[in-house]
Image 1 (cartoon, each protein chain N blue to C red):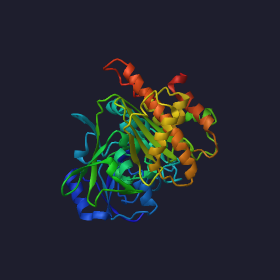
Image 2 (image 1 turned 180 degrees about the vertical axis):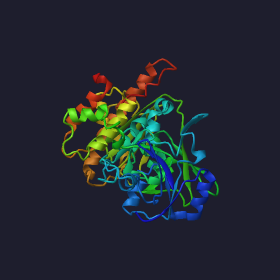
Image 3 (image 1 turned 90 degrees about the horizontal axis):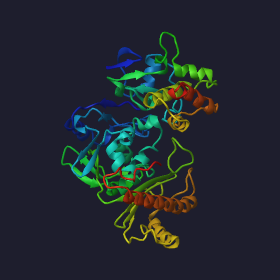
Length: 152
Length: 300
């Protein structure tokens, strides 16, 4: 039995040792925003925050999250209201097929948390672990830049 | 994944007892960025995975004792990159740690795990080698210390015995002025293994060391004690002669990241560049006032 907080709610769950955090989020909690894609930590589609640090949830065992606070893409909006970063993704047309976007947003969320005024180069570095097969990197970077304090 | 038991001991003695009991069937989990991939690919099938992140003795993550900096087995790349003491004393290690994987990987992957995985292309190995890293190993029997240079035996193979655990990496503080540089050749930036990685360190006393990765079955260390490489007056021809002699220890293979011939050619080019940058950094330190920030901390 592990205890963890996901998007502000507390859970006590039985998980097999061989379950990843991504399995727990998608299959047990039905939070399917985090995507199962490469499952080797190269595409970033499963990115979530664990204790305020961005991680690939496919590379973490669920048991390792015992006692942690996890934030997924589903946890960014408050009362149905998207946050500033999510709004920026919509406004700049950064979302094409959408598959990579939860991971991109969570990686960007972490960046803005540790560096509220990133340069374009810092945004590219921060998102280098998130692949987009549509090739919408320019709009994605624009979205992050426009959501940052540098744009206020 | 094959089924396995998961244990999260809170003391070192409990962790070592588990390791002793299960021997080669036990795998140690720190960051998991390599281990979980191997579990999922069924490349390994341990009966138990021992998570060492809550072991009390493996804190603090980074500490300074006397004339060395100790990096615990649970310190992740992001911790290493952010630590002011590492940044000021071992800037080339910071440059290396900052190239591993992606931000998400660096938030989980440990420095010790990078070493224990023993990939020939481990990005932090060349820097740790030129900084003279030593490992502290613990087991249910006697603890021991080992120079990192003796730890790598081959791809994925280390001198760790069943039941043994790397508890920390010690880096001796270098008192002699020196300049160091990490360099890496990849097909693209981010989440790609190195085609070549290396670290160069030039000491004021004239010794020059190079650590090399991805150009042999294990990362290795070579040195020029003649003072020629460090001599700013030396000709390029004379330097190349010494570099080529040091590089005879490299035995690159052809793979998806580059051919043997390409690696050989680029080894010389990258060694020249890293040497020049290290000499420049050493001069910058010599020109800066004593007690200053230590000019070796350049940006990559």
